[in-house]
Image (tube, rainbow, N blue to C red):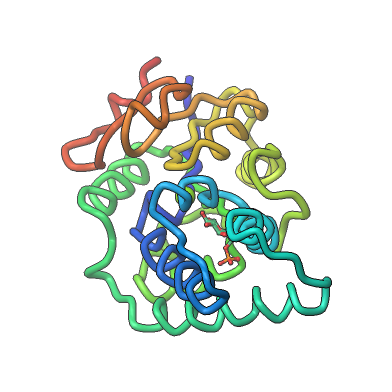
Length: 213
Ligand code: BG6
Ligand code: MG
């Protein structure tokens, strides 16, 4: 029986994937190459530095470690600028109603994101009070597909992994949930998220019944 839900943030609760994309594209263009939405799928759920590695591989560029840190900082600066303007209106359809129902029915809720900006976003969109635990990029050493982020969330909720269900929009996140021995519901397109137990396109109309496996 599912007793806890673990939510990824970017692309599940809010569409920050579009801001990550804009910032990475801006960096790629500045470095002289194109970066498409299809390329961007590979960056979802992946850490900031690993994302940069993938981006540079796409552009066929090589830099020393110091320069790479500066490039990642530059991208993050733009990203932080985009998310600083976020408010409640950016919460994706149905998310708040679903979180409210989960709380009413006693299901524990955690965030499971590898973003170091997760807290800023949760505060900006006023969702922090819904969460019993927040595991983000400041608390984990390994990004998805490593299961660390989800295992830590279960631990903080005092639940066994098999009692948890993960909501994810990234291929790397689905793999991480599987490796954590948790149920996983993909949020997005079944073509991309085919390895999930179930796939929904949005939270609109989704109720607690979705947790019956
Ligand atoms: C994940 C996103 O949630 O966080 C990735 O899906 C992003 O695209 C990663 O790279 C790290 O985010 P941040 O905010 O720490 O750069
Ligand atoms: Mg995501």
